[in-house]
Image (cartoon, rainbow, N blue to C red; front, side, top):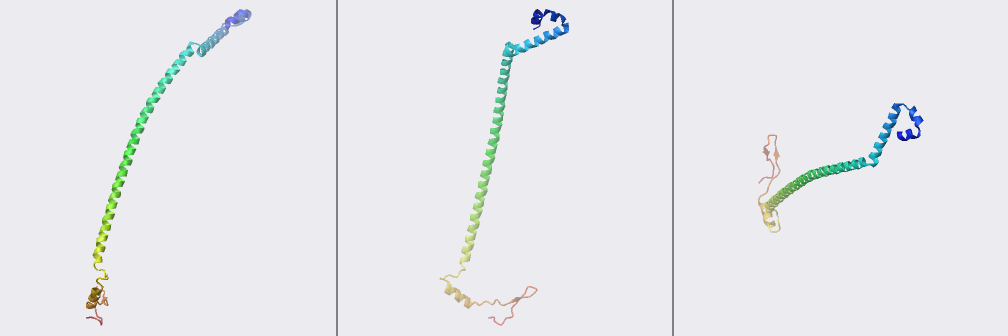
Length: 157
């Protein structure tokens, strides 16, 4: 640019101070460098560097994704094991509760069978009436403050 200025405008170039010509040369160098970076071999090198950096960052990202995936798998496996353990414990507890319920019902059935021996049925009705008439009971009594039973009633056999 300065060459172009100096050839076509020689009188003007002589009027420019050395500092101004140096500033123009510097500007021209900067523009040329910028042009080289955008278009030339520097741009190719920068593109290669960026592509290599991108590849290395992608490899790093893939490695981190793999590591996090393994951690996630381990966590999910532990959670599945814990869930399975809780399920087994709940099944055992439910089984124990069922066994206790069955034992209680069996006990109630046995108790009812024992009580059924004293039930009055059609078969033992006459026998029970006879026993009641042969053994009269008097429920007419009182209990004093000391807890003694007082039986002074008119009807006693």
